[in-house]
Image (cartoon, rainbow, N blue to C red; front, side, top):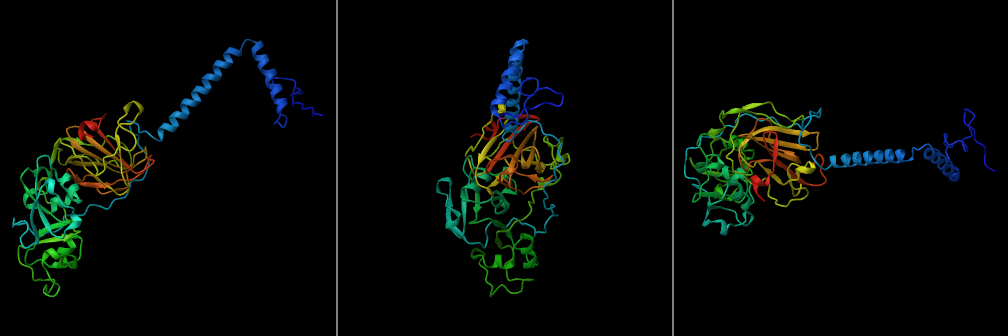
Length: 402
């Protein structure tokens, strides 16, 4: 026998359609209540209105759900200010003291293979232990040559200062470039410089330099590190070494227009009127060329392209410019770098794992600015890159091809 339930105001919960039953163990009672309730609504002529209102509410709910889901996959064209903490980067240090480059022969005193390589005859770096000479072909860039030999673009500049002066734009067809077997720096030895200081400035140990076979040095004959037995002017290869760029173009490159990031977030840099201007010719931003996810689809709010790869793959600046955003962004980008190339053009590199450039850094085409990652709204390792002309997103394929 069913228990008779009475509402606080005396109404019979099972017989009065205006009052729903108590939490139900009796499904049949709930169904009877619903039938009576709907009969009353229909009798009052409100059935059609109720159906339309219900459909509208369901539609609104579904639209809200779709927007919430899509937010995780697509980036809006306008960024909002966030309170996220910036990614801490090591502060850029002052200029490293290097011995003056006197324009001596590029590889004097350095072991070098006799062959001259071209694009068709490029050899893998890991298969050799000496320098080779590469003849620049039409269409080559510092970036493409570095990629061909498995090197960082900076290494091509650091081992060819006599001809390139640290400027990727100085490369021309027919030019002969030194190609080392691995990343590092080529620099002349100047008498009076201690080997300890020289190595420290390059970020290595004296033994790294002495033990490199191509330098033709010996621990037995090197002598005192303060005044080592190294011929004045001898070119030394510093394997794994780095150095600051000494390009005179880095000195106060004033711009007519202020460079300021057009995305907002904790990593936004202070506006600047300094920095190199882009050439207007752009290179592919990473060693991978697979479009991993979304193409340029502005109709659904995706204002760039997604290039797949592995976490840790290097990301390159597509052209010269100044860094106007470096750090975390809370609106989907994750770790992001933005570069202003002048003439209204900015590029945005999102979802990065690590960042190698800080606010205000001068960058040149092919420079490594960080590594590929999967930070922010990302489902796997890839680079999301955008091109913007002012505040207007542009199809990246119009700049860097396919």
